Image (cartoon, rainbow, N blue to C red; front, top):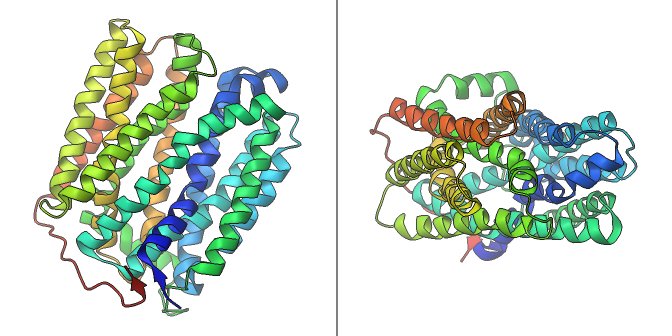
Length: 400
């Protein structure tokens, strides 16, 4: 069975989109949820950190399962758990049950989504892999761009519980399409090393872990922004719920632009060079955000800094991921799981850190985001500049 590059890109993007949809769709409804569940909004915001932790747990188990038994069984299991828990979330009536079910929902999402980059690694390598990952990211970015708007619409029409019904339906749809159209790309069956052996091999690889840290710190700054976005825009600046999706979507449009730039520049520049540029720009944007926060600058300046900070992940994510996976062609799902675990655990901790530092101003969140960017830059210098990605022939199972 063969599949075209375009169809594979779209289907893998739909699979990856499970994560931003689950995180971003209910952001505009957080105030409504807090009122309905009779709890402060910052407790509802903790469900974002809970989701990130659960997602990391799902990836660490899903990666090993996928390498040993195949991509399609892991995707089916993960999306099944995600859909079932999404239905259960429709009926929650306490903040405690919301937090617990969000963690379980995220575990299912992690088991499924960890297979996306693994499928790409099964079929591509080197710059080809980085290019395909960027293409997937560009398609997938429509999810976080539209998610807040869709969430605001569903919450207005049928209440916040309708959002979780929509997530359940989406997971079922993606599962059917993936199992129907995407061929099994893992031909190693049960010959892969055991879970512990595979993960030890990855975490002991210093250069690979340095790439993982770059990616994780860069993404942690974005997760901090996502966690604090409702406070920043809805409460601090007092914008309306109908305006929030546009302010949030501006970051996604910027990221799509940088992803497009990344695809074009990969023909002339190495993934390392582009990743370095992205991390440096993120540091500059983080510094600007901190200055704007301390000076109590107007809304537009904060929006611009956030757009640049989040947007340059388009230069960082695909290149760091491809550089790391290049070391592990035989256990790519496990390597992708380690990326996800470190990335999402760090993101959850950063969100919790901001919650503890929260003082009613934007200075704590700006400090956290700037600190994450600086740590990403520091991690890159641990890598060194000797790694060079060498593209290999594309598998014949893929047609352009």
